[in-house]
Image (cartoon, rainbow, N blue to C red):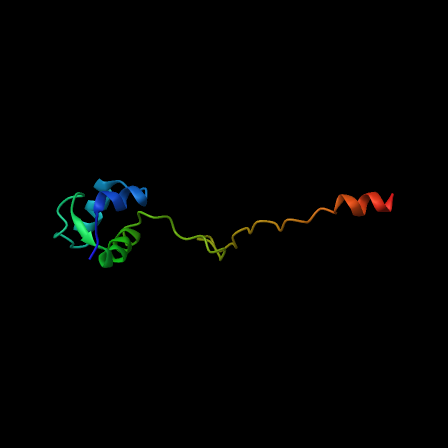
Amino acid sequence: MNKVRLYHLASDWSVSPVAMMEALHEAGKRDLRSHYAEVDEHRVPEVHQVLVDAGLFPEPDDGVAGEDGAAEAQPAAVVAEAAPEAVAASN
């Protein structure tokens, strides 16, 4: 089974290794003693969820109502420009 070091996950996720370790220890994951610890790949989602629960990742932007209840703005649709041939033919 493949293993990955916690500091690699922290780097990939742009999370401070110190903050990662604090969140893991607060969640009771004391078997992970340092950011040099290795975890099996099947435990990576578990580690990620602990960090999400600790607020180390921004909330996903799904375009639904925000915290104040207002709907999030969606990007405007791109309007296709007329082909140059069509413009030239109409002149």
